[in-house]
Image (tube, rainbow, N blue to C red):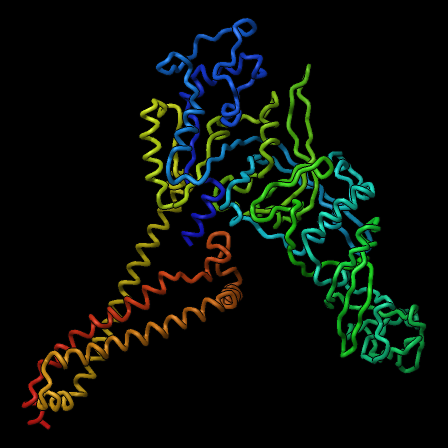
Length: 629
């Protein structure tokens, strides 16, 4: 659990974080951008400082000089470039995987939630005031926190391909304005180049079966529904309120046998399929080129019902995806997979990643909206809106602000911060370097080495280095983890003592029951060493057998742990384990090192425990034993 929690924490927040101190903000190096026309009279972020060609942006012919801030100089008399020198130290440090400059901005977010019902399409809105954090495309660990897109996401994203993105910027947008056909086809090809639909099912509770799917011949049981005394529809299988009937498929018609026999032409037969039926499906590639809307898509489907085979081509109208497989593609999908770049174009907008909490509130991949921020114009501040859409969800961990952090394109975050009016929060929180290391256990050593190198360059006063262990919000968790480890260690030692006592007791009983055999062996010339080895071997055999049985039982339990968790959760009417705390996969992970310890240490401890009764057996006098017998 602790390992899983640390991995998620460092994937989002990095093992080592470097932020500026107040001393940095009070330097000429930082403040000079505020009065320099070349810097647009705005301070620069770490990333902008790295890209800048000039350490001193002030032009004496145009800009007013500033004298109340200290110039930090190199030995050659030039202004020290604090950020570039820091970055050079980081690049030279061994054990660092990569460095990411982070930037945080504040703004508003409004999402438009368009949902299809059986008879209509509805929309609602969700507003929030989150922090926007620049998405790190080089963070290979971030994929561990991503939530995989599910079927509901894919169905919704497919339906959103038809709609105009620009309408999401309006206060009361229309939810049925369709995108232009060429753009729709481009989106559609992108979508199906990344997934392969394998199964479909009816979208609502029943679906009218096209006559193209009817078997040539065959018969099955169904339920007839009557309305005002007339046959309204026939649903395959049993339906509450339906009358049992028999359907017979003939070459040119369909016969329905009830109290009376009704016959329909195959194209007029009112036969419906319940929503629980799943069909094997494969997209007809040609339909992607002529489809004007999703209902024009054609799938080849087949399924078996009561021994009859249904097969043919059907439109996607009133159907939905049940299962899909990811396809390899050189193009970039709308959604985020494996921590790669966020999607962005001029029509769909900026892709953003939301905390998983939003998904629990009903947000789906493909939901569109806008990001709002204030920008100072000639006379007042005006709201600016940038189109966004939900490209995925991530598990935010246990940070107190994690559920308020939206991951967005770095350029978008920089754009918000470059506006004249923005949210006011601690400057040291809003910018810095996130340092990712190759080995999490080496982070303290890397920090100490960096601090030493910063001191050599006289930079230690300008930057604050924090490892993930020093983050304020995690201190209580680490104390709890330490307490849990001590408790588990105490329980483990107690269990080992009990187990060793059982081995000793068993072997003492064995020695007492085998005194006659021991006497005979001693009388035949067996020495004490041989007797000790016999009973020590018995202890080792007990240890080997018990470790094998215990390991097999552990593997079996872990393979069926999900069922046990559901059972215990049912008994207490609450989830037995919180997946956000323990991790969805960590509960079923079997540590190979722990298994090795069990298989090695158990026989060793049994050998040690068996030495006492073995020594007792070796001290038995054969004359006394044989005389008593």
